[in-house]
Image 1 (spheres, rainbow, N blue to C red):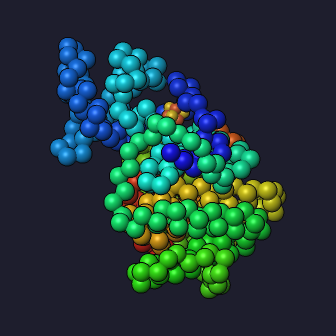
Image 2: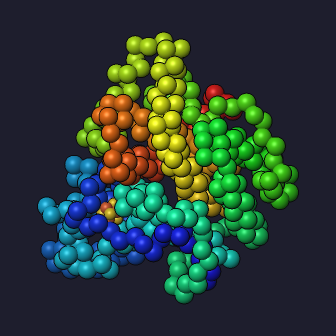
Image 3: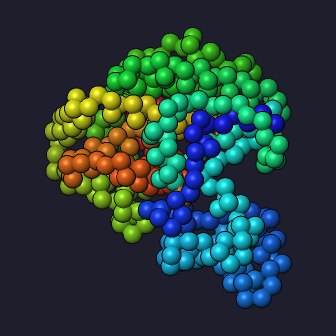
Length: 367
Ligand code: SF4
């Protein structure tokens, strides 16, 4: 089948034991039916160890131990893979951070930035928004139930148009703000048109309302977002890379009035981009990347606002984290940026409660 593949997908190679975070820590490890069947048939000591660690009734997962996969060994490697081989690993572990989606007429292959190596590749990719059509014989089955069989193709065309517009946009905060306003307006029109049985609007014909400060967010919006489950004390153990800068946010802004806080934040952002205007490229990339990651969920749920605005939220929160790290530590190395992007992606993009709470904050303000 035809598979649209991100331009840097094939460059990925797992860092193994030298990975600074590993994908075996800080989130659940869901088990597919095939893995559960294999574990049910596995005999001896290993069979018992595997079955003892499975939890859940309908949706099964490995029971974590101190926040990490119980099979993550002292050398930071997978003991299932070492002792039983790759075919005993859950599908998510064999594929991660590869994101594969079969939409019927075509498939999608992307990399998830919850992995620091995938995050590094995204930040360096020459063509971060390119989706290259490739032929693939072996691809996961299609589970799409939408009866509108033409919808995936229409979505792919609209995504291409939006990504082209993002690429053409001025690489400044004002440019990204304009693009975010366009996404907001496109989401509204696409929703109305879909409800009315029409096709998707052409993004190039959308006339956005130019009134929303969508990049960077205001201090009041950041305050609201940091009061969601995005930040909690438990994060100091689960995700120190995220906890430290978020904690610093409170030290910096807690005693300031809204006006003082807004002035300080605006000065930090202005200085950051004035010192190196090319820094802006990263936030445009992140907006496009998160847009691509969520886009094809629209095939089933038509939740245009929530999927499109997540991309805007994530670019803004990564900017805030970068500003805080630079302010606190005086430097922002590449390793730090990829570790923070990976930790943030896990916390905010993959955690449904956090993602929903952040979206509600945005809609309470501008919805
Ligand atoms: S997070 Fe990425 S690099 Fe690290 S162990 Fe997982 S797949 Fe490998």
